[in-house]
Image 1: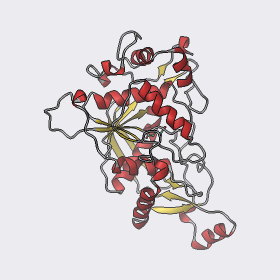
Image 2: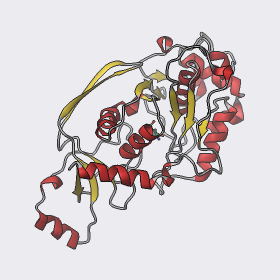
Image 3: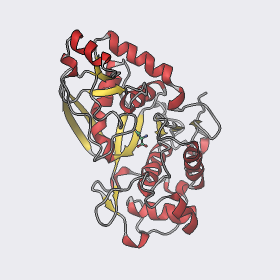
Image 4: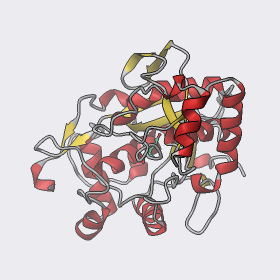
Length: 328
Ligand code: GLU
């Protein structure tokens, strides 16, 4: 189902340009922290200020790290902040959740296989993390020699009880794109070292594949997410183009870091919504985020929709933003 945005959000209703489609794409592995909230606010403002359609996709790919109560809480928290969406997942719905989209990922895997771009990998490194978005410190999968195993060697590995993961082979090429916020980027992808897991040995599809397939099939044209995912962008553009799709525009948002330089983590329960709900109103929290993002001069309380009209990426910092110590 595709809903058109209400006239309320149509800044330029007479323009005939294609309507942009953005997304919230949270993984329900914890409670949204301040950094997630900043990216969500910017993703929402980006779409609403252009009269676009906002989608909610639940990235519950990894059964070991996805919990329904976190998903429900994320949806309630975004609504509480006034960050609404037009399509996709809502509590209780089966739509638009990666856990239900295995057939789509199977189909993409088949297409890649037909192009000769899939090989079995018997290494266990990086496997555990492959289903979730790689953040700094969670290194990308390093190159391994599995691509060059002879049939006899592969058989021997299987006989020893190991089931393989599947990896995507990179055809060496430099991927170039212009990030809406960080400008021109290029990433020279190399065979071997940049090949990446697309399905874990336990059958769970990996983040890079799922997110690329979903962005194609859900018609996403604008991806706003935190800068720590910038390094995944070239792989996603590679996959999207290989699968015959056209890549969305990417717009990375600055990271929020603790005063000691530490990055925030959902799993560590950092500065999260449980705390904010107890101590702030939605307007106060949006006011703080708006100040951090350079959208207003002070942190005075404001509603998210009051920021739509004047929203521009120009005032948003590019360097990591240090959270003021009085918030910690
Ligand atoms: N689900 C990912 C996360 O919560 C975000 C994926 C993306 O925006 O590409 O970190």
